[in-house]
Every structure is written in C-alpha cells, then in structure tokens.
Length: 75
Image (cartoon, rainbow, N blue to C red; front, side):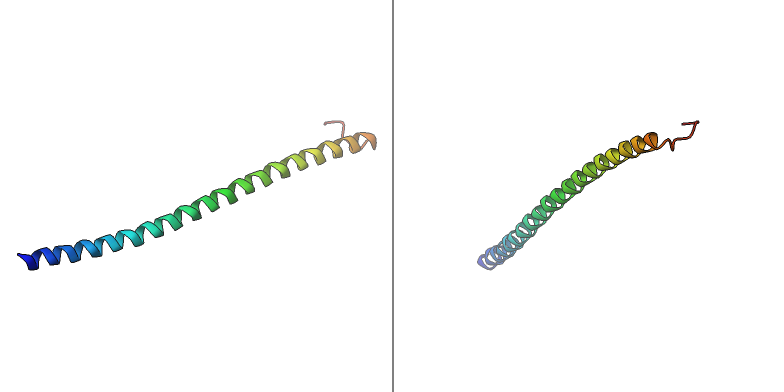
C-alpha cells in the first residue's frame, strides 16, 4: 500500500513540475501576444497617417492642376 502511495506521490510531483513548466511557457506566449498586438496597433497607426498624407497630397495636386488648368473638361 505504501509503495502505491509513494508511486502516486511521485506521479503527482511530476505532474506539478510539468504544470509549472507549462505555466511559464503560457506566460511567455501571453507576453508575445501582447507585443504582437502593440506592433499591429502601431502598424494601423502608421496606415492612418499614410492615408492622411495621401489625402493631403491629392488635395494639393488637385489645386495645382486647377491653377495650371491641367484638368480635363470631363472632370
């Protein structure tokens, strides 16, 4: 009976160690996901800024075309 209990204790100890290792790995993965989310948010911000700049350039080009009378009659 004692041998069985000792075997069960050893198994439980092994399981606890495995769970501890998995907890560390999950924590590391969570940190990686947080980093990726920050990177994605930064990319979205960069895209918004790029769109704003392009819209500003489009407006400026339209003004230049009008001043130089480069617009077609169909526009």
